[in-house]
Image 1 (tube, rainbow, N blue to C red):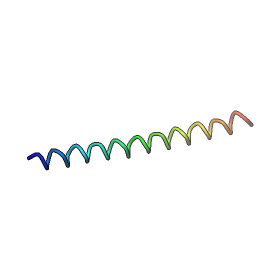
Image 2: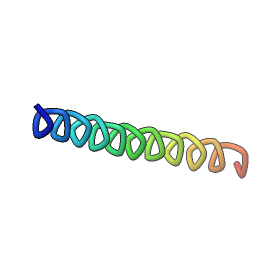
Image 3: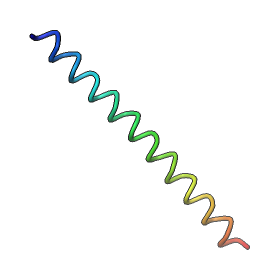
Length: 40
């Protein structure tokens, strides 16, 4: 039971990290593209 819980928590944590990374990547893309349009 404890092992399953540990793996469940690990999976959620890893998914959180991946989601955060993708969100940050998307935000960076948005800000960089808006920067280029503002410069023009």
